[in-house]
Image 1 (tube, one colour):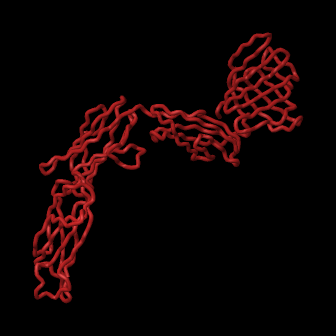
Image 2 (tube, helix red, strand yellow):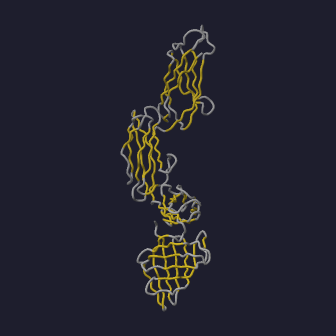
Image 3 (cartoon, one colour):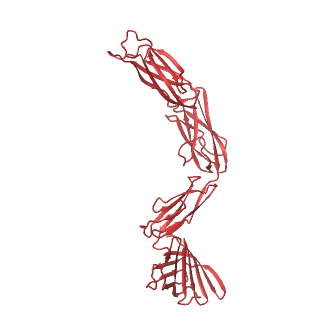
Length: 412
């Protein structure tokens, strides 16, 4: 019987170009050695559309056939190959023919595509890129002789890219394009000339304003099991959607609400990321630090003093530290101690239990002593405090005097 040993051709055929095929056969007998010197008729046909369309045929007595076909249709094509003995007289054979049907891919001789860093694949339409950013341009050759070909690269705008590239053994080359600093579009063209023929492909690239993501707060604080609400704003695009992630610990939902693990301990810091849906290369970072209680820590800001109908506000001379026992039952021993601020310190006792929910922590109590400046509230006057996010307000009331602290937590 006739046996097809191999069918060799380019990995991808080039449209409107001659593409070489090499077919090797042998004839196997019931008895004796295989022979390749018998006259064999070869035919290659296109079976993509049902009926066979002959492409090439010949007869050889070497067991090998080389031919060239020139496809005119792009895409997948099904080819039908037949090899049969020209005569079987006086030969002891079970069959005199062999056949094979296989699929080839037909592309243009040169194909130019682009891919942005966050794109899953190369494409003819990569979408706009931010000013000053980069993307990859891929040149692919189809047909025979694709290795070590020089590709000329030209463009009609202010972006930058190499003037040429050389294909690898698979007929591919990848170069980096850098978008200009101004908004606009330009056309990049890749050209190859070989065998007296020139092939080219072009792609349009558009530069847009950079997409910038901003996250608020940039540094949050949370108790074990507590939450922090983050918000994101996006400029450079009308699409305000972001994807939230907290890869280092805790969890964050699609609305930006971060929840710390109940097992988290004071001092732990976790990362939060907001990534633009419109431009996944644009990402903003924030951090969350776990504190033993939301009021404990270092705060800085201003103090406003009211007395005799007058009011004046000035910055604290130094950050204020809040420490002490916060979860106190009514009238239990203990105190919140404020120290620093450049105005001395205040101590509160006789507190009601600390009120804690997802958004706010507050306390009320009786001021035991205070030395916040020359205008001091009286002993025994009420004291109030409330935290919302990274902001804390403390009010000390006395005999005609009120001290109001407006504070922001100091990271650390």
